[in-house]
Image (tube, rainbow, N blue to C red; front, side):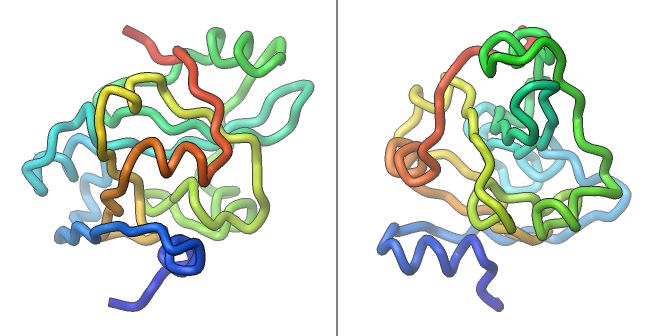
Length: 157
């Protein structure tokens, strides 16, 4: 497998990770489908969402694949009045990644990153490798430090 920017950055920081490869199903790029395909607990597999706050600009959120973001709670947490999701067509130019392969690691520019507090419930979590067909399994505490992520409760229950 060719290394992604996320993998290269983890390698440079000497952060260990495991690659979990899966067959890409273009008809279903959802995290729930990937969790089922890999036989991995969905609450331990995190998807990366990109949004824009009215005051702070672009923001990155990582949440379990079986949850949805609560935009009102995310706005309060980040000091915004309003947050809107970035349109899929804008992801590549903004992050360097395509839908289904957006990683919180190694975007074109470093944006403030927020991770759902449930990440702390697990010693390891997965995030996208930066391309479809592979997830990165790594220590959750190490990932939070590496991303300089803020942790909070901003998902819908």
